[in-house]
Image (cartoon, rainbow, N blue to C red; front, side):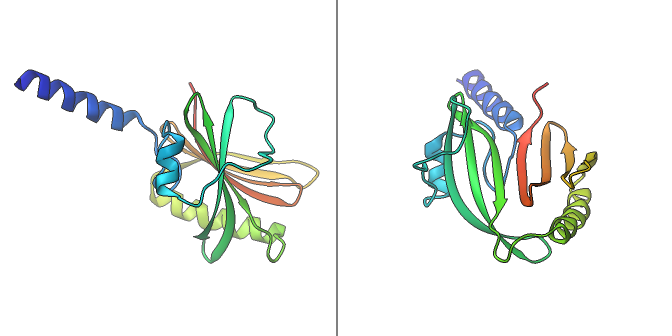
Length: 159
């Protein structure tokens, strides 16, 4: 009996250790039902606006304090019956500017550095689009400024 209890405890700890934290209380691999229990207002949209057929999508909204309060639409993407990544899109009220992106980038860099994330990539192109990627272990956080939209992705490396 002790061996069975020890084995089950070991498996539980191993499962939790390899389950990546994504955004807030969400973990990689969670089911749609588990995410809906955490975020009861998350619903499957009528027009999911995704071209990937294997992904289910739930949407909600959240206010995040990133140096100041910003409102985001939160999209939970599920692949192979589990949560794969979380995408936050700034709700433009007022419209986001490049200064908004720069301000959030500075804030996140300071905050994530204190959580032992390292800056792993910075991208800029001649159209004014930019992205910054921070990583820690297999976790990644990406801030995008593309086509005057600000997005924040919480995901993981698959390697």
